[in-house]
Each structure stands twice: as C-alpha cells, then as structure tokens.
Amino acid sequence: MAASRTLPLLPLLAALLAALLAAPATAQRPRGIAIDERLGADAGLRVGDRVVLSARPGGAAAGDTAVVDALVRRAADPSEVARSEYQVRLHLTQLQRLTGAEERVDRFAVRTRDPAATDSALRAINAAAFGFRAHRSADVAAGTSRTFEVVRRFHRAIAVITVVASAAFLLCILLLKVDERRRDVAALRLMGISRRTVVLSVVLEAAAVALLGSAVGTAVGWAATHAINWHYQGVYRTPLAFAALTPGTIAFAVALSVLLGIVAGFVAAARLASTPPLRLFGR
Image 1 (tube, rainbow, N blue to C red):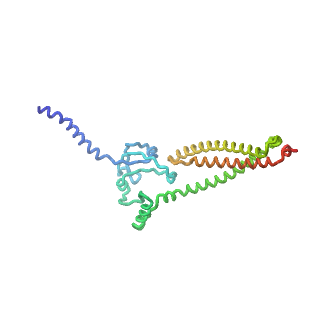
Image 2: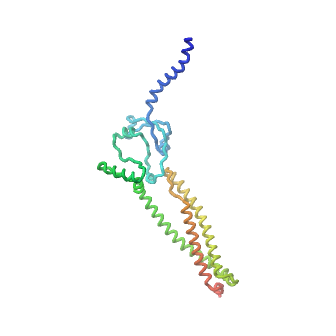
Image 3: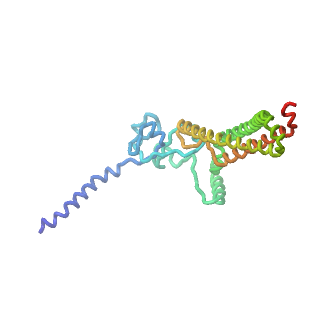
C-alpha cells in the first residue's frame, strides 16, 4: 500500500524539479527590443537573435544584451524618406541605462481626446517650466513637410503650363486637320448639308479623339505611377507612395481633355464652315 501511494508523487516531483531548474534561466532572459526591418535586412538579424547594445562603437563588452522580439515596418512618413538611420525600439529603462540620461527626454507625444483637450494640454505644458514647448502634431507635420509643399507647388505650376501648351497645340493640330478636309466640307455643303450639321460632326469627332487620347493618357499615367513607386520604394525602402493616380485626377484630366477637344473642334469647324463652298474648292 505504501508503494502504491508514492508512485503518483514521482511525476509531481519531476515537474517541480524541472520548474526549479528552469526558473533561473527564465529570470535571466534578456529583455526584448524591436528593430527596423531595414536594420534586420542589412545586419541579417531575425526574431530571436541576441544583440549587444552599447552607447559607443566598440563598447560591446560593457553593453547590455537584448533579444530581437519584433521587426517593425516603417510608416509612410515623408520626413523620414531621405534619412538613412536605423531605428531600434527599447524599453524606457533600457534606454536610460544605455544613454546614462536618467529622467530626461528630448521630446514626447501626448494623445488627447478632442481639440479642447489639446488646447488645454498645450497651455499646461507650455506654462509648466521655461524651456518646454508643446506643438500640435499637425503643425509638426506641416513644418517637416515644407520641402514637399514646395515640390507640390512646383508640380502644379508645371501642370498649368503643360495644359496651356497642350491646348494651344491641340487647337493648331485640329485647325490643320480640318483644313485638310475642306473639299469634303465643301461637298457636304453643296449637297445641302447645313452648316450646323457640319460643325456638329466635326465637334463630335474631336470629342471622340479627346476621349481616346484620355484613355491612352490614363493608361500611360497608371504605368508610370507604378514604375515610379516601385523604383523609389525600393531605393528608400519605404511604403510611402511617391506618385498617385486618384479617381479625382482621372476625372479632371478627362473632363479637361474633352472640353479642350470640343472647343478646339468648334473653332476649327466654325472657321471652315463659314467659308463659301466654291472658295473651298479653290474657285
């Protein structure tokens, strides 16, 4: 009976012994960090690898050992596109021990519930002590994106110049093309076709050509957008979209193209239709 009572205790003692042996190893496990995906790719690091953190190059002997717990993908932030620094996310105590800066920060972010709470937090932080300055995240983003704002205005100026030059070029092309069909227009007029019908047919033809050109331009723009994003996202290793083709842009381009085509076709057709048919035949 005594032997039968001690047999169930053996698995319990084995499990307890294993837990006691594993406890020191678990307690001594280095703390985890999260690293940038670019750092992981360049340094060949994966989740679970051990690294040594040091505030100075070559100070690995006095550094802290950490375990890579996660690989973080960078957000699509325009202010970080041209930066080549790597990012490592640490626990606050790890960072303080690494830099030797106890209870000291360069900047921090505070999330508020609504605009009123934001205004209240700004006043409280700015009045706390000399040297503190709080800013809205939207203001910080606008300040760091001034270069992109200049580029956007530059692109808008180029777009306006391109549209004006294209409109003038389209008008000249239509004038030449319609002028080449003067004999056809003269024959239609002599057959009794009204001037209004002739002008309408030319305008419809110009609108159809404008629609076809818009479709081709949209396809070219879509291909160019994907090529630009593929190239520069690979160069800077960021998910930021450097070029975008939105439905609003397509609608505006198509509407403008058709409008310019109709106006140019009407001007060219009205000029030709107002000429007497015999003069169009050269008589």
